[in-house]
Length: 198
Length: 198
Image 1 (cartoon, rainbow over the protein chains, first blue to last red):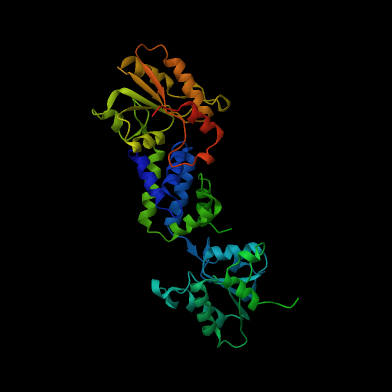
Image 2: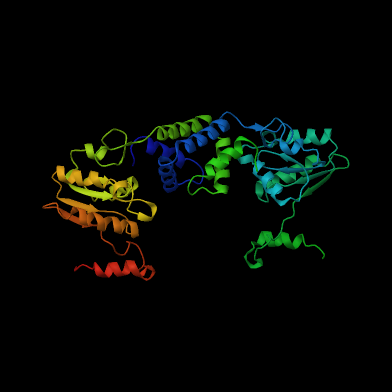
């Protein structure tokens, strides 16, 4: 619809997830009128990510240095390892300020239909880590969906043979601030099964 | 929340209009796993826009060459000029396939509170163009909001003295496919005022 570079930019922006044609157009015209320094900063940020982001050699989280901030932090309890699918899950759990242990980022969840088996995830690294360090609890914090549940079930089986290791799973139940009548059957069922005496 | 380049990219993406922190995170992680060639294309598109987009020396629309595709097209009627605020308005009108004339892009609308007067818009160029060429109709297609209406009113006054020139304004009324009961009073009022015999 537009000529030359403007349409190219709209096309490229429109390929990003969650950016539709209208948003792409809006962003492109914003950049057209933006300070060249702002565009240069965005270009530089893209360049750095293109050149490769470093992943922590211990936990697999995105990192600035070979070992990430959390794995370097001596105040974090090395005996508890929280296993998550993605770096954004680490951020979500960190925001709760409830967990003082370390993380292990799998890089996804088991999904045989998409060809993602244990070898495509950082499962071997997890087992090696638990074997080498004095880990006493592994918290399985994969997503509460089909792939995440399958991954948790698989990991429970793999972790069964480590002596003295407690394996836990995040509680399923009603989301806080939610409305009981709007909860789906599965969630409400889990909330019932997991009921606690008060 | 993230370390290094990933957070930088999330921050830069989050500055774009309509991109919230969640979308920025989603786009950043998409780019993290994207083909470097895709990122390079986005970078190139940004570079070209940063280096400056060409504006048509006749109508002011974004253009690849000094004169845009529409102004170069001999089949387009030069006697009718449609005045719009922004390049995206040209695209919107082109999509209707109802208009076979030329355009004039003002580059915005009058907005004295933001310091945008006639000198900040391409008003002088419009008057020079109408004086020099055999234009018989000017269609004022500025937005039907306060600034757009003010701009149209101002242009009507400026164009009054051109002999033999018809100045028209896009019809206001009920949007097609809309529901009469959900129309706002102003729109419904305009639809009544502008009623046509059928």
